[in-house]
Image (cartoon, rainbow, N blue to C red):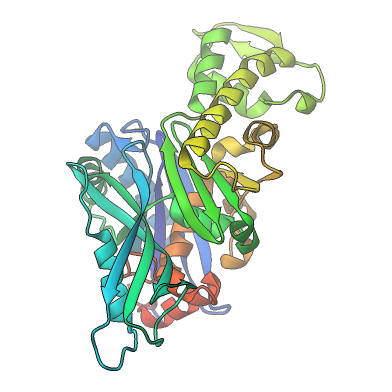
Amino acid sequence: MAKPTLIAGLDVGSGKLTCIAAAHDTETNTLKVLAGRSVPCRGIRGGMVSDIRETSAAVTHLLGSIERECNRNIGNLFVGVRGAHLESFSNHGTYNISRMDKEITQDDMDLAVENAKAMPLKNDNEIVNVITQGFSIDKQRGITNPEGMEGSLLEVDVHITTGSSTHMNNLAKAIQRPGYKIDDTFYGLVPLGECVLSQEEKDIGALILDLGGETMSVGIYIDGILKFSRDIPYGCDLITGDLSRVLHTSRANAKEIKEKYGVSFPTFLDEEGEVPVPSLDGRSTHNIKKSYVLDIIQPRVEELIEQVAHCVEASGYKNFPVVGVVTGGGSLMPGITEHCVNILGLKEVRRGIVQRDLITSEDAFFDPQFSTAMSLVIYAAGSGVQEVYGRPTYENNSSLFGKIGKWFKNVDIFGG
């Protein structure tokens, strides 16, 4: 029997590329992660391509090593994008049912969504994702799946993400240069929210924050629906830069100090030890107190979370999120959730990883740095390879995990 098709999620992050590869596990009928890896990429800045050759080389190295480890080729590749060029907003679409029987079909739903997409865009912009938020029939709101119901006027609310065509095309070229085919592209926050937040959190009102190196992605869910999303062009690499400048050491050393000794809240400073700091030329080392590292990190973290607070306030949904979930590599720093509670005014904030019942994986790949890449694989499988906008929202009563099983039935998973 041929090996199942390898499904890969490629997260185009801040100065790095992260990939998770999974396949159908015939014994459990679930997705199973087979490999995962993250590599630095000097050709990516803030989620956008700055050097197409460097980016192509990193893609070749990353995806090639994944294929060699799994001993098979990537059959489906899904890409997650981020960056300041992305914009998200809500829109409304309508469609009149003129047939005698008035029974709403899937085609009617699709046409309502298409009408919602028919809107003027900025120059050089294109639609990345369209997520349905809910339907109305003859002004009756709150309908999640109108298929099979009767009515004369079908309306739909959608959440649209647009991005720069130039940046999107440059990224596509960088990935396709080595010979890889992109099956679909998503705004990374969309699958992340679906796979990291629980349904209860989305219903009560939740804020999701993806802390990257050069960007922070913010999403707000209300009544189970994504109402707002935005990328902020700042991230945790600013902390690395602060440590490098103040301590007079290389960025590589500063990054190591941040990850090994860094805390952002005083209560996490468990003991007053010393931290070795290599000199800029690497020829000598001097020691500093751990509290000095905290003094450098804490003001910058507060500034970053304040930027998130400004974003939430401008969204018009400031008073709606009750809980928060922080994910991404930056969420690993002790004290981040405490700053979110204090500055964002949320009742509770937790560190988020992909829900474990959605996919089978080794613990190492549930690390927050893999969350977006893993979410891409799960979300793409749940959506169906050919679907480009929120069909899963038509089936809110069925779990995403159940939809993965449906997708397995419709795709030739034993080919390739």
